[in-house]
Structure formats: structure tokens, C-alpha cells
Amino acid sequence: MNILQALFFPPEQPGGVSSMVPYILERFQKLGWEMDLFSIPKRVRSKGSEEVSFQTFDYTQFSGNPLVDKYMQTYKDYIWWTRLRMSRSYDVIHAHHPIAALAMKHIYPDTPLVMTIHSSYESELMLNGKISEGGTEHRFLTSIYRELESKVDLIMTASESFRSYLAQHMDQPEKIKVIPNGFDEKRFKPIAHENAVPQLITVCRLVPAKGLDVLLRACAELKKRGCPFVLHIIGDGPVRNELEQLAQSLDLYDDIIFYGYMLHPEEFMPFFDVFVLPSRAEAFGSVFAEAALCWLALVGTNVGGISEQIQDGVNGLLVPVEDHDALADALEKVVSDPIFRHNLARAAWDKAKKAYSLQRVIAQLQKVYTNILPAAE
Image (spheres, rainbow, N blue to C red):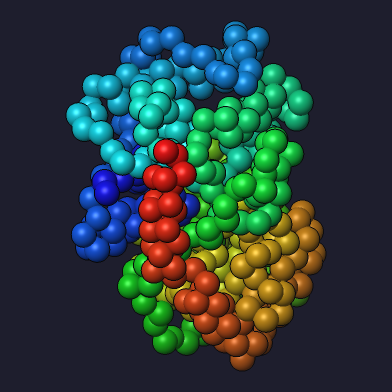
């Protein structure tokens, strides 16, 4: 059996899809399975011109909107690039982005297609203040889900909470299969260390959806309480300047280090003590599992896939969204009590090793790929 893993852009960024798919491919190849990875380069722009249509809605009703037009052009570009570069057929295609799924089904209508929906583009855009709920862009993007449902043989996602989100946009959400993300434990090497000052770390794109403004306000409160710490922020994005300015206004600039983008933050994380990310939404939150495998104590918001990974007070701490005082309270607990912090980190590591192993994902996907052939026939 030969399988194609169809991504959107190349797997360059840490976290999410990029943390898992290349390692899945490597494991399957070691097991003797034929598997390739395909994506569209970021340099490909405005090349596609092939006409496309949807079965479940007329996309032209949204034409003229810049975001919609860009989305449709990218869909056509993906088709153009696939026709240009693809020279073989596959038994099964596994897509990891709506555009990849739609393009592959357009070109290979008879090939069994499975898809993992990893996140909600429209939710991210709303949280980042780019679109409004119920607006043209939101209605277009949410319409894509039923289109996928009509064309894909099996839809998967990484958390029960995200399946619940998808349910409002699909006719048969009970058919969605949940396979939590898995991680190659060999990438993560916990290191015994003792930091004189507790070291906090967060790893994410610097966008409003990640709630780093809330984190900075919580850190300001933590500093007022006399709790020593250093916060390390790994990642880059459009709100970096705003966050740096906020840190200065909160008299935090000397307590925070902005690193920018880093290709392999998991090599850096084991030297820290606490991973914290107060996301406003998260379909799964792969970076929490990665931090757990680095033996860090976890602090996150009670949303989406984060709340499925963390049992409050057992293997991490959960706080309400947008509540910087509650976040400061949680951080004070882990900063001021090293034994409690150690116990949380050990419990998080134990759960991540058992629940989020890459081997478990491989076994589940083997069944999916094997079963989809007779199902499609």
C-alpha cells in the first residue's frame, strides 16, 4: 500500500502538524510502508486558473471578498502545483488541510481520501481580530466543512472538543474519528537541573489568539507579589512589537526574553521549569504535550484540547480564559513550591508518554488506511 501525506505548506514551523507528520512518515517507512509527503511551496502564487466548483454551496456568492478570493486562488494554485509535480498515483491520500483535501479530490476523484482537520482557521481569524462572526469570510470558511464532509471518505481530528466545534457545521459529526496527536519521545530529553530563579517558557506564534497579553499582565501581578521568575518567549508574529511595548509599560522588560522564531524549541525546553500558554482557543495544543515530554510543569487555559490534556491540580493547572489574576495565582503556586511543581511535571510526563505516543498514532492510522480501501470500494 502506498500512501500520500498531503500538507499545505512545507513542514517548517514547530508545533501542530509539523511536529507529527514527518515523524509519522519516517515510522511508516521503517515498517516497510510506501509513503510520500507533498506540499505547495510558499513561493507559488497566482499560478492556477483551472475552474473549480463545490457540491454543497456556490462559492461565487462570496466572490469579491479579498480573503475568499485569496483562498480560492490558493486552491487553484494547489491544483496547478499538484498536476505539475505529481507523477504517480496512490492507494490512499491523507490530507492535513482543507485546500490539500479539496485539491487532491479534484485531481484524484477515485482515490480514497482521509483528512485530519487540525484547527479552525475562522476561529483564529476572529480571535486575531481579522474577521467577524457571521460575516462573509466566516460564512465562507464554515461552509467548507460540509463540502469536505461530502467529498472525504473519513474525517479525523485531534480532540473531542474540536469534534464538538465541527458538529455545528456538519451533518454527521458522529462519523468524525478522534485521534489525538502523537510525538516521537526520542526527540525529548528531560534534563535534571536546579534553577535558582524559576524559569517560565512559552512557545507559540505571537498572535492575539495565544493570549500572551494576558500572560504579561499575570507576570506583572506575579512581580508585585515578590515572586522571582524569568519568562522566555519563543516565537514570532504580528503582535511582537505590541507585546514588547506592553512588557515595557508593565515594568517587565528586564524579566522577559523575546527569542523570536526557533526551529527546534524542544531542544531548549528541558532547561526550564514551567510551560505556560493562556490560549483563547486551541483545537489540541501540541506544544503542551511537547512541554510535558520535556518534564515541565504545565499551566494553561481551560479551553479546547488543553483541558483534555491537563487534569487541574494533577498534571498541570487550568485557569479561565482572559483571567490574568487567576493565571497569576496559578503561576505563584508553581513558582513558589518546587515540590508541587516537580510533582505536576512528573505527572504530565507520565500521561504524555502513555496518551500521546507516536506509536499509538501509527497503530491507529494503520487501521484507518487498511480499512478505508474496502470502505471506499
